Length: 201
View 1 (cartoon, one colour):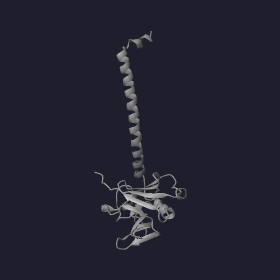
View 2: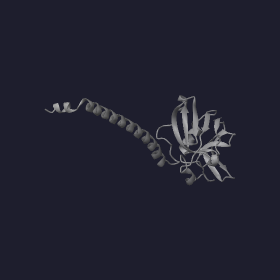
View 3: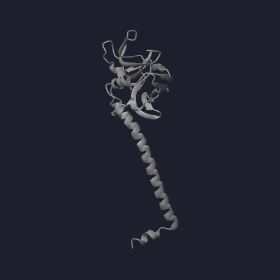
View 4: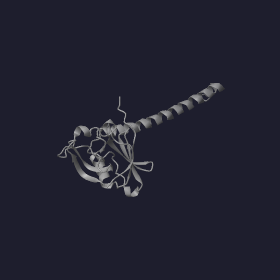
């Protein structure tokens, strides 16, 4: 008797049930994709929330540049991120801080031979570790978040990494990230700087 109940649905009603089922399945798939996209963004923001200037930006190993001889550095001012890339493949993402008042130059540059383990600039009362020049032979650098004359990090500026610009035009990175660049990035590696930072409302 239970099987007969299915036949009580007219032809049009059966078509409607099938259509409704298809629509529900479509909605579920769309909703699932949206959740996946948000989850990826949430993960990045959650990682940044717990990130400190003493941390590497990612929990995975830094790339072996011997395996990526054509790697290059992508500096995105809009997102305050530095990407180590091989062609279009992202190998590693670093939280960064670029120039306040739009002072980081945009364009294509190449890592220069000047680099050092520490500097201090008296006029700015500011120093940093692991600096690597990419423009004007010591004027524009990758370096750690700033320090005072004794080498002690400025904790307030350090908190801007990955969030907002805070430099005088150089590119601030965490200590481990910057040391990796200092130790591993070769002279003449391409550096592309682009984008515009928009302050969050």
